[in-house]
Length: 247
Image (cartoon, rainbow, N blue to C red; front, side, top):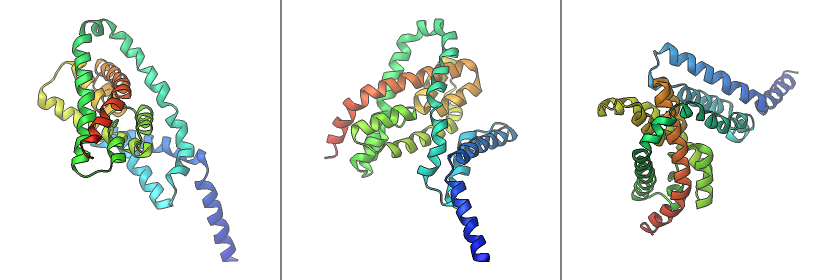
């Protein structure tokens, strides 16, 4: 009898863990928990909600033995909101249209130089450490938002899933370090601060920039979008040339 009960409970558990709605709700709850921790910590960067949510969800998946593919059946619904969330950044950006008109040249120079360095440095460092061509390609678009990065990686012959993980790591590390680096550089201009954060740390960095103030967040959102566009065109031209250096 007990074996039958245990077997039934195990079957129910497996059915529950395979339910997409469970992982969707759990992701939202874990992020809300991360926000609570973030506020209680006094908004310390190390407790940024995304980082807390990633760690907690990873532990849950590990303990329950749930494959990432099963989790994404529910998580994909949140992933879908990346597009609308990115478009919504146009609202604060529109408020800065007069400043943008005056700053287009320095912003363009920053975009080209920063976007190029992000691609070249990632590929060269990976190649110098003995990474495979697929890994180097997967690293190239690490500084842009996930949908664009995965598309660029796939088209160049990389591993989109690896690229997605690297993008998240880049964003989290960038969000953790941006305040300290900007303070060290004594940079006070909201436009410069925001543009640098968005270029280096895409969406995660942009969320941190909005916590600084609305203007910083607006320029970070602009930078995130432009960096994604630049990388989509620049990476296919730059990466094959860099790969030849390690043949």
